[in-house]
Length: 410
Image (cartoon, rainbow, N blue to C red; front, side):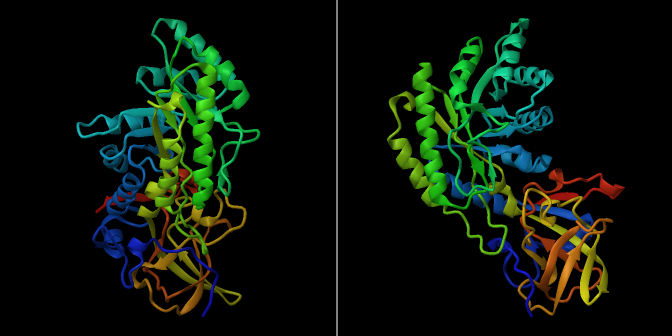
């Protein structure tokens, strides 16, 4: 029995039998917390952080809050990362609250984004947050605001590099972009920021790449670019944020990124870095790679329906909670995320089914014609890779259904 391909289930959850998360079955978690439910497994995230530390000795690890801003997750993450990267005043609030507890290891918080308001800029200064400056206009506003008597801003220049990250899912640099300052405009912006505390550069070429050689090349070129800009400006940057770009395998045919190869490549590039960067700290900013595979979206089957010979499993979840799995979050061609009947992982398929949510739109399709073991009404369907850009990146208010619950386990 064949259906359309699905992506690989993360290895921590792929063992045959009932799905376990943090030592508990998916069914037990749904009984305890309700359905639909996002579950985030600390053990999986801890394993990713350990792999990073082993591969990137001496490199700071920053967590990009936009990937998943769950408060419990942020509190846990604050004890294990060196920085938080935010994209709004709301995320600054989340970051500073999580970083405030005694065991926090966070020493840097930054804010990026092409449309920061004056209020966000002032709030960033008040909280000691580094502003990644994205344009000549933003630099001018910072200069104006800094003349109010409350002191300078901590800033870095976010650079729109003159290259792209090959094979990236989302291109953040190269060509015309709303993000960052074009390379030829960086000297102008730095001149406008003379009254501020300039910390360095943020250079982010792209995201969701599984190509180790492409990331190695982008990091090498990023280091060279940071050195050229520093030499031209006569500054020795305190910190260079190399961005991230590390992808995870969502779809059939995807293979995990070779983190060890990327780490070795970066070490080689840094060993040959120009003298102007000799005392510079380097950071890698990761969101998806740290949390995506740790998250599972659980949703119960409400109905089995056959229409024109096609079986639909109608669930109590949907794209209002997990938009990305429906193919409506940046993908051009819809492909299936890894999905399973939670109590029967690895069991032989009995039928081909399309898994849909409860919304009145044909877009609400969580799994398209997938070969699955038979699922009855009340069974739990698990959709994997739900730890990043899940609940907070989905249109939760659409049609007025309740929000999904979230729980951190393990």
